[in-house]
Length: 339
Ligand SMILES: Cc1cc2nc3c(=O)[nH]c(=O)nc-3n(C[C@H](O)[C@H](O)[C@H](O)COP(=O)(O)OP(=O)(O)OC[C@H]3O[C@@H](n4cnc5c(N)ncnc54)[C@H](O)[C@@H]3O)c2cc1C
Image 1 (cartoon, rainbow, N blue to C red):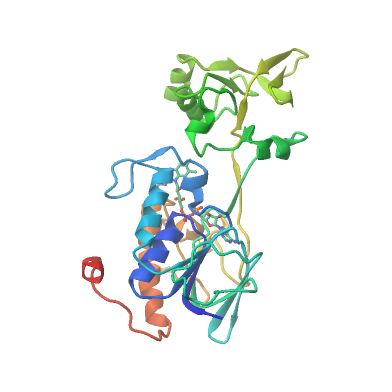
Image 2: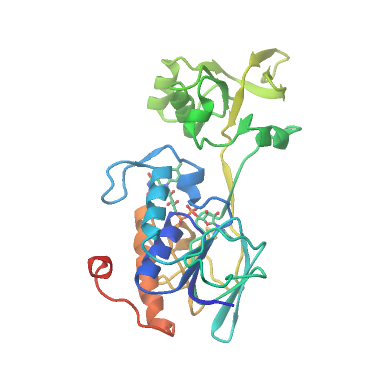
């Protein structure tokens, strides 16, 4: 079995950048991500929303940021495994064993390498936990046949591609900022946009609510969805017997997301908010285990992408002093390494 210098758990923006940076410094690196698609929160929660506070990128969408991180990753050798959730990490002697729920190869740096893992088990000299907000799952509607409609594409929990909604009659469910932003954005492509919210007031920025009220979005408040068929949804007015039926092609459920932090290693110290406690070098209480990004915690922590990128650099430089490398660590600025 291949022994990596570093295994990274979590393929959000911070894990992806860490894989690049570790590869650039000459570490052999593997990254394991639970979702089929890497990218974490920007990819799954807000792919088309704009980000303005990543250094050197005045304006970039969540999905494009991830696309760029994957392009940057192509400069180095790194094995990326997705659709594979890490279940447990154990240390035996000086090596970590990382076990996952299935064996699925996403991208292997060197196609001539032997298959890296055949038994859902990986080994490394160091671990970087970039598990962020944890496993991300959308809050569901909770109706019968919800999965069937999700599989057929009628129900979505986030928008991957606005073009999927082109010329469609869309019902957006929810009353927070995301629901309102999506409803307004969908107006640019959809044939009709309905917004259904169970409360008489929205929980969103005043400016967004004003924009919504002045827009062509058809509001149904306070209503909840009570039934759905292939082409129609039935709405029930809250605290009333009043019902109405709308003809819609697609439903976007925007009830927020549940995140689930999983305990991966015994005796790992966590903060009150269940984030992994680290010192100034992003080292946890366990030797050889580091954490960076939203999942890491310390006094003054700010959970932002640019902060996580910096933390990954600190962690990798610190760990490379600790682990015994079979090869020399690459030193110097990136221009001298790639130029
Ligand atoms: C709506 C919204 C808007 C935002 N806007 C901004 C902004 O404008 N600027 C900004 O800087 N930040 C913004 N953020 C915050 C930013 O998205 C996070 O700081 C960033 O995503 C943290 O990256 P990460 O890689 O640490 O974690 P995440 O993005 O949470 O990625 C963690 C990854 O780890 C994976 N994972 C977890 N557990 C396991 C496991 N056991 N096995 C395998 N994989 C696992 C998850 O599936 C996930 O892909 C925003 C967040 C939200 C929700």
